[in-house]
Length: 226
Picture 1 (spheres, rainbow, N blue to C red):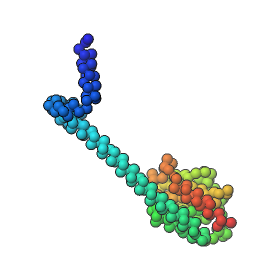
Picture 2 (tube, rainbow, N blue to C red):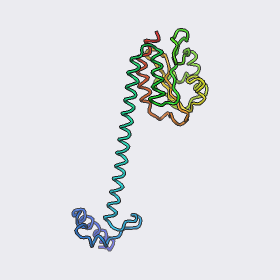
Picture 3 (tube, rainbow, N blue to C red):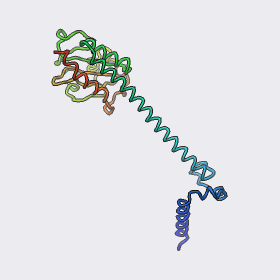
Picture 4 (cartoon, one colour):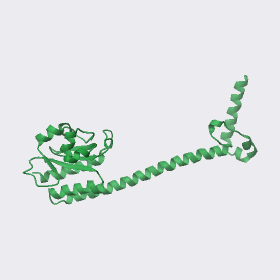
């Protein structure tokens, strides 16, 4: 047997023995104290210290993961409570003006969204006066036709004229947008939120909250637009 093969066999026997007898080094501290580790394993001076260091790192990683999970759960609880409160308040609104005011108050205060708008499509003279923007379907198709043709929320940076259509003069301050067309049989509006940061709303981000509020509005708004 070559010397190299003999060394490999001996190392394997030692590995097997230590795995079968995990308390051996604890019972034989004199052997443990004589062991040295390569420099690339860190500044450990003993195998026990190295093991403790590895376990400490793993525990720290686990604690960080647990903290992140708890923080996410807390944030989800807050989001659920805010969303539930908004939905209940929308259901209790007595008229279109109260509904829009409730929506705006929640988006601005509860959810701390920088920019938000509800655009209703129709004849301004025939719709009740509210805080919502009003535009004809023809005008909307001219300005945000791509958005209206979508069946889901659209996120990202829009052209300046699109921002102005959705947010009025404040559109010049909006960097990125998440918007969803409102349709229940017929198209009747657009719900949009914005942020001054161009990278805040991206095409890859989740829009579950916005889509859910849009679904609620889908069912409530039409009764006020007849």
